[in-house]
Amino acid sequence: SMYVNQLQKILNPGGLLFLKTFSDQQTPWEGGPWRFSTQKISEIFKNGFEVVSSKYSEYQGTLEENPKALFCVLKASQK
Image 1 (cartoon, rainbow, N blue to C red):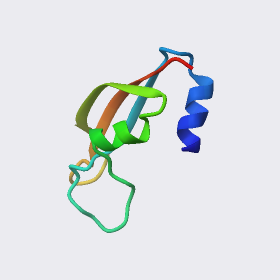
Image 2: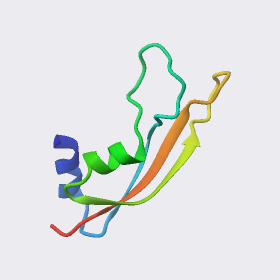
Image 3: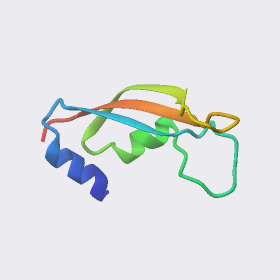
Image 4: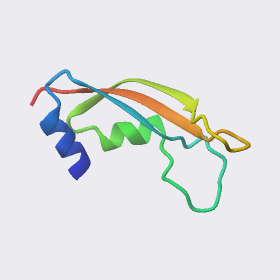
């Protein structure tokens, strides 16, 4: 994808990307942002990045229930 390609251009080999997205563990709600699993992140970034770690968390905010999140650390591979 264009996003992954641009990240590869700006990160040195071995550089780390800290990525927080909405999680597939979020209970459904109308519309809203895409939700991702660790597997899906691995698929999206398979050409150029290694998933070093992945942890489910939450976004803190003012909603009654905090939205579920996925925090990943990815490492740029050799160019």
